Length: 101
Image (cartoon, rainbow, N blue to C red):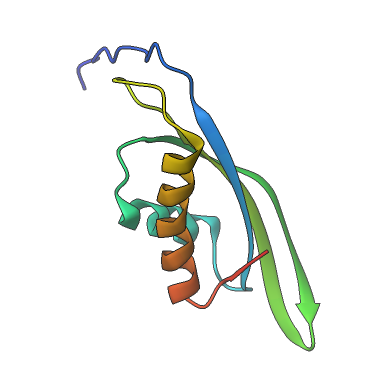
């Protein structure tokens, strides 16, 4: 495929971490697909930085901790803006029954 050039933003990024419990058969790929459902063009990266599984009351659960990186090419984002965007992610995850921690 042809190589394309994408300019680097001159504005700083803001990152937010999310950690949650999911059913044991949920994969990281499932989580990234859910993140994609939000369709936020300001999310430039999603990085998994921790995961582990254990049994809780006889039920296997997995914990995923990951970082969403928000950045605009037009302006500096505010904490309030990013926190509002993060709520959309929380709603999607809670809608699937995932426990945000």
